[in-house]
Length: 252
Image (cartoon, rainbow, N blue to C red; front, side):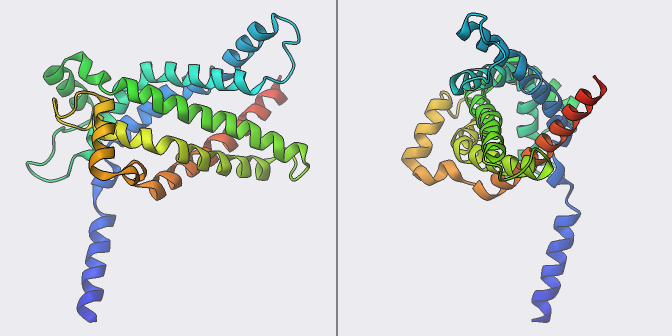
């Protein structure tokens, strides 16, 4: 029993001191700054533009319909990927590499960009763009549209007032919906982007092989950590966004 406790303590210390848990952190921050600023920052403008096109310029101030919101989410999500894809490739590669002598593929974030561009060409930095566009279009729609719908439902039914508890509840619901619909594409994207050159003919080939060899459950591997990440991100993002929006409105 004592030996088991000692080995458990040693394992805990190793995990807590393993810097590999933060592999890809710099690239991940770069991705979020580039990606989130486009998909969230342009969403309202694109939504208003689509609403004007649908109504022909009339009733532009009315609440946007479900189709308009989905179209705006797909547009901004796909557009953001085109700019942020290199940062996503580097993030995934660095997260997958192991720590230790002889095991590290890249010495740092900048080295990863240079190495990938040198060994695979500039196209290597945009590897997996198609599945990533699909994935992030889905994520963007699930996060933004679901959050809008849940928030409006909570307020209209007078369950909660328009405040932090309401934003928190809507964010949790949006995070769950996002995880459910995005996990299959996310798993395929990660596996394809981290694969050696020539292993798969494309993202579709990767998905088909997964289905044939591992079954449908393979598309939901890592669901619990993905759910935890998505919910945490949505809570932080939407509560911060709502507070900043209120602050800007107060200043105006």
